[in-house]
Figure 1 (cartoon, rainbow, N blue to C red):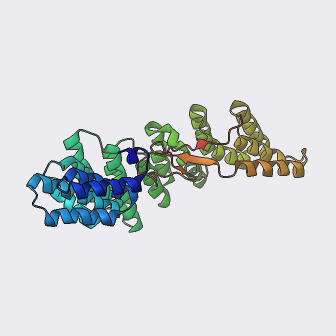
Figure 2 (figure 1 turned 90 degrees about the vertical axis):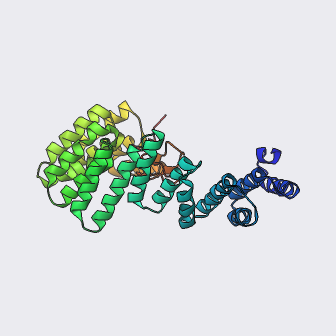
Amino acid sequence: LNYLITNQYEKAINAFMDAVRINNESLELHFALGSILRRMGHIDRAINMHLDLLENRDLNPSQEESVKAELAQDYLKAGLFDRAEELFLKLESGKYKQYASNALLEIYVKEREWQNAIKMATKLEKESGVSFRLQISHYHCEIALNAILDKDKKSAIKSLNDALDAHKKCVRANILLGDLDAEDGDYNKAINHWKKIEFQDPESLGLVAAKILNSFEKLKKPEEGLSLLNLYFENYKLRSLLNVIYEATLKLEGFEMAEELARKELIRKPSLQALDQLFQARAMNSKHKEQDIQLIQQTVRNAIGNRRLFTCNSCGFKAKQHHWQCPACNAWEALPAEPSEMNEIS
């Protein structure tokens, strides 16, 4: 135990192996050793040890179930999902019922077996009383994405509506529904889907700001789109909205209005991004020394670099783009829609 506390795992393994040799009848020692072996990545040794217990020991039903639970963990850790699933399905009817169900859900998600994941999450909800509505909505969205790839729009729409039925605040479903309508040229309907996001999660508006503006442009109403985004920014002050608004203002209203927008934002909340935008607008104004301003602007952009990061609220993983599922810990919606402000001027 002292070796474990001080993270000396190799010494802990040797100590437990000595203990197992001395007291070979103790399953608890075998399980402790198996746990350390898994942690150290010696999965094959853990598997062989647990298989040996099953094949060469006279175990009562409860002991056999416990060894199978350990072996199932070995298979899961090794990525042998078929073998792990087979064991966990057998364990679902015994004392490891809830653990087995959670493990099966993990397997189905990793294997992208979304229908099985929905069934298992629904089962876990009933058994544990813990809500899986958010996760289930994303499983439906994943099914919809597969249907979109197969050019099956009808099935995709059904799955996205199922996602909203499962979790009415599923932003992802409305984004995808809007995308499908925009692809069909029904821009008004697409905009209406994206507008719903304000009432689901306002911080996610930055994910559709450019889509909204582009659809209004397709309708020959860019000013109306810019006005809507300005209203959103006034209400929620999202930096991701400002970036889209700034580019649209520059295009539709000219550099003087864009410069004023950047200046106000720099006063409200100083950041390298706002400073960069101010310099960009000023460089377009012939009254300023364009080359000097562009040089300063390039310096600012170099300082900004790739510091616009989305940070997982669950494990701290940092990504340069938004993910619905954290690539590190696999948690759903753990990365906020609005990136971390890594470039504010202190």
